[in-house]
Amino acid sequence: MELLIQLALNGLALGALYALMAVGFALIFGTTKIFHFAHGATFVLAAYTYYAAVSEAGLPVAFALGLCAAVALGFGLACERFVYRPMLRSESASLTIFVASFGLFIAAENAVILVFGSSYHTLESRLSRALQLGPFAISPVGLCAIVASATILGALEFFLARTYTGAALRAMADNPELVRMIGLNRYYYAKVAFAVGSLMVVPAAVLSVYLSGLSPQSGAWITLVAIASTIVGGVGSLYGAALGGIVLGVAQNVGIWRLPASWGEGIAFGVLLLFLLFRPTGLIHVFERR
Amino acid sequence: MVPLLEARNLEAYYGWSKVLHGLDLTVEKGKVTVVLGANGAGKTTLLRAISGLIRTTGEIRFDGVRIDGKAPEDIVRLGIAHVPEGRGTFPNLTVLENLRLGAYTRKDKQEVRRDLDRIYTYFPVLKQKSNSPAGLLSGGEQQMLAIARGLMLRPRLLMLDEPSLGLAPVVVADLFRIVRAINEDDGVTVLLVEQDAVGALEVSQYAYLLETGHIVSSGPADELRQNDSIRKSYLGY
Image 1 (cartoon, chains in turn green, purple):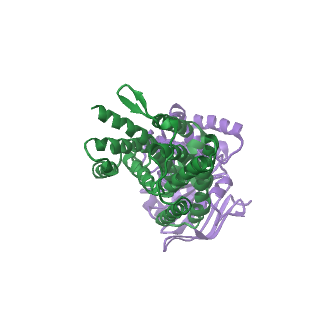
Image 2 (cartoon, chains in turn green, blue):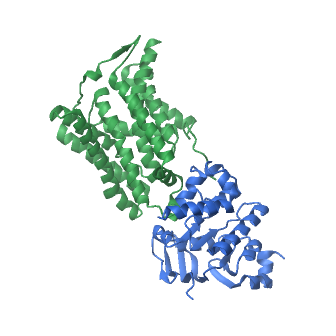
Image 3 (cartoon, rainbow over the protein chains, first blue to last red):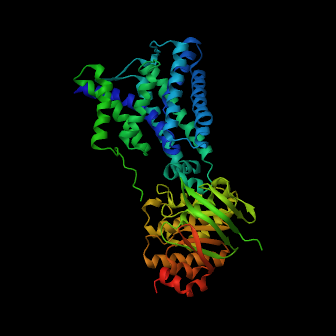
């Protein structure tokens, strides 16, 4: 039983990071309808930037964080401005845009392999060592993941629910055509969505370097997680995406209670499959349109 | 006097099929003009063409200036508010958010606030429900919100696409009364598209009859009401 709780705790820390990735993806997808597969590339680029800044260049953590944020933001905005926007202007089909995004993802992944090689990297920190809480152990990094995720998601909720810009973003998600009829500058709000979504990758990328280590292939996994969480949660709902991320993180950890550890990812996607079969609309229903 | 809106030889397509076949249509400043027609006559297409949501050939002039070929975002900025059929609101946004977004293109914040108050006097129910999501309003209330959202632009031309669709007759009567008040008290020019000929002809000064993409008849609303064949096919008496 104690092991189970311990696994759930580990899962919660991982799920908190998944939630950040998933909500960023869902925010971009919901407001712009762009299937931003390259969201995982943002993750890989951000994580390697941080890793290189700290371990190879020996820069202070605060500086490395800034650099990492700049790379994530720059990559996300560049995707929007130079790839998706021209495609949307020429009225490309959403499948074409998806393929372009997939291409971006592969290009970024290979660029990382070219520079850093395809081996596994990890960073050690005093913060990685576990703290003992009664019978349970959690690393400060894990705790950071939970706190950072909760704070950022709370701030996002406030931004979306209470500000004019937030209302405009929700309007984009609600009815893209009506948005044009009221004269909203949809490219500006697409930029905002990409900026916010890409910045949310930063804490996930940095903490996962400590929490689970880094390889160029982790981008594909994290993209799948983000997409799966969005589906598990219910497409169109950011709460759902966050919850979906946590469910996947916990499932991946708790799943190995009685099974070999290598089953973790398989179990997480088993959960996804069950959702698709039995509750295809996801955990949270967005309310039905007429 | 230059008409507020003028379409000449307007043609529009959906895919390969032609939906509007060379329409000529004029909307005079300060008046309510109605375009009557059955389902599939091209009424919605006409409004979408004016809004720049679909590609057209021919000419559309707004206050003398060509607007055909412009993007919808730019056409809104000229003062044309389009209230589409059915889904004219953002269901997950509150009533107040919907209204504030209606004034998105305006910079005169003070005036926007004043207009909001005035719109609440037309539609008191929207004030009561200003914080509930639009999707939870009744059909009639949603239609009121959609119109109110259009008014928040302080438009020079308000285009309404079948505001009566799916509403109870009492609600429809109410809605038309408000449309008339908006036109008379605020001098907003209205282009109305309707199937409900009885109510629509009552609020309008000028009417067009649209059949499968052709204008088959037009004239002052009073005259059309007297016309026998129109009475038979549209008014049912």
